[in-house]
Length: 51
Image: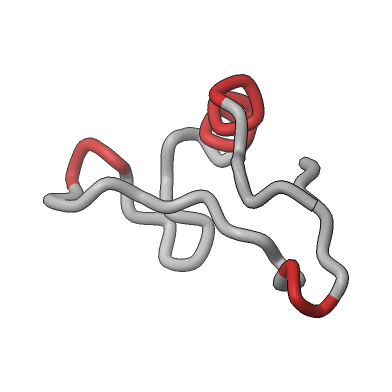
């Protein structure tokens, strides 16, 4: 399974999260660092790269 997350999937996830961190809900514009797109279940535990 690829570890690559496509730009389309990144845009989908960011839009779905309203461009906020899905853990703390801080707005992306108010963050010094860029947010990461991550797997809920890690790849090594069988997680999939999907929305």
